[in-house]
Amino acid sequence: EPAMQLKHGLLLGLLTILLAATGCDSKFKDCQTVIDAINASVERIKKAEVGGSEPEKMAKQFQDFAKIAEEEADKLAGIKVETKELKDMVDEYATMAKEVAGAAKELAGAMEELTKIAKDAETKPSPDLLDKMKEVEKKGDAAQKKLDAATSKEDPLVDKINKFCGAG
Image 1 (cartoon, rainbow, N blue to C red):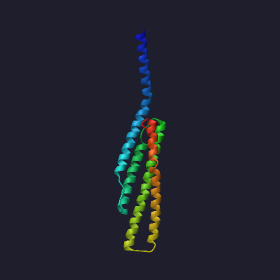
Image 2: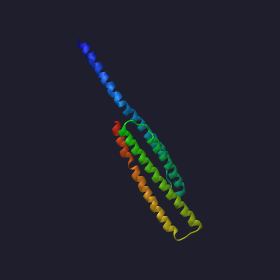
Image 3: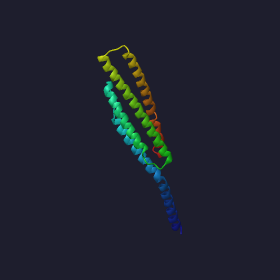
Image 4: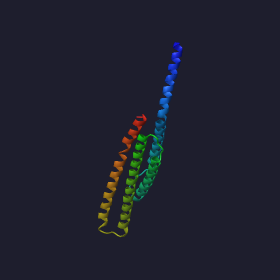
């Protein structure tokens, strides 16, 4: 008779574990989907390097970067997640990626304006070009601050997702 109790206890324990695992199954799948998607997005965005000192080249790089960030934000926003709390975090991450894209577009615009001013200085110099350049620099600085503010949200969001998913 003690052997029978042990079997029943073991079966009851297995049943409890199975039921608990099934309840967590959707959260686990959602977490895996989200983590994989964010990691893929980050890798793609990292490949879109921006740098150098030539405004014309940097404008194109920022435009490309913005386009990729926007595409990745749309992909993330479109992920099917059943766990509401996690879906909210994914939406927050997608919003942050859109902010990054917007700031990158503004930086691209400033770089394009600087390129135009430099070309104008060569062909038709005028005293107001310096003022225009200062104005564009202010726009560029403001856009850089927006970019910094948006990207500063990423680590805390990733930590929040990892904590929720039990990976951190």
